[in-house]
Each structure stands twice: as C-alpha cells, then as structure tokens.
Length: 168
Image (cartoon, rainbow, N blue to C red):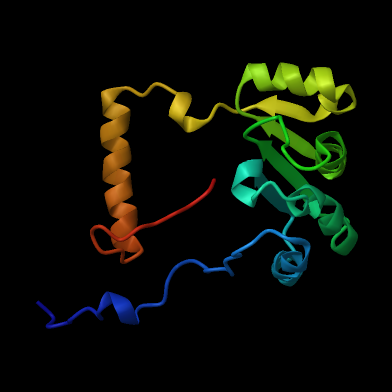
C-alpha cells in the first residue's frame, strides 16, 4: 500500500469534449454548429437525421450544404431514421439534405426502397445499417455489453444512475 488516495471524480478531467447543446433547430442556431465544426475541422461529419427530433424545421436539411461551404473537403454522412420529411416542402428540403450528403445510411431495406424510388439519383451512395433496437443478441453478448458498459462508466467517473447520452 503506497498510501495514495485517488482524487475525487469531480476533480478529474473528463476524457471527452462536451460540446454546446442547441435548444432549437432554427437557422440562427446553425452558427453554433458551424463554429464547432470549423474549429475542429473533422474529416467526416455524421448527421443523425430524424426530422421530428429537429422540430420538423428546415435548418437541419440545409446543414450539409452549409458544412460544404465552410469546409469543402469534409465528407458528410447522413443516417436517415425515416425517409419522409415533414417540413413545409419535403421534397425540396430532403432533396438538399440528400444532394450535399456524401453518403446515406438508412436503417432498413423498406426505407432504402422508398428512398431509391423517390430519389433515384442518390441510389449510388446508400447503405443499410440496421438500428440496434432491431437486432437480436445472444445472452453472452448482452452480458459482455453490460460488463463493458460498467467499465466505461467507471472510466468516465459516472455515478450510478447518472445519465450518459451518446449517438453513434
């Protein structure tokens, strides 16, 4: 025993960056996103497009276009959690999103068929990655996941019951 007492979790630096949280998805709020992306200059930006989560406003549909303007070499990957847009002009807004996204991911074959039928010019840049909720898992996989989750929560100094929200 060296007598070393670990520092309290609250004093340790987190192993991740906490980025700004947007409270609305309107055009004036896009500046926050563009500033963060410009400052980090990533190779790829992955947009999780579930229109209802963005209050069904048009701003999110134009994000790939605006990202291409500030960082033309950055690739944009968009996961479509639904292929229907509920904005004021769905074909226009979804069309902009699709046109300026370099790759499209849909979560099931039905959405892929619908996307290709309604937007055939983008069929060359799509793939299907099933949503995790639709996949079956063996008991051993679930047990390993729980062990990994517990280990990661300890590493991030998260207290039991503390919420960790992440998109992948």
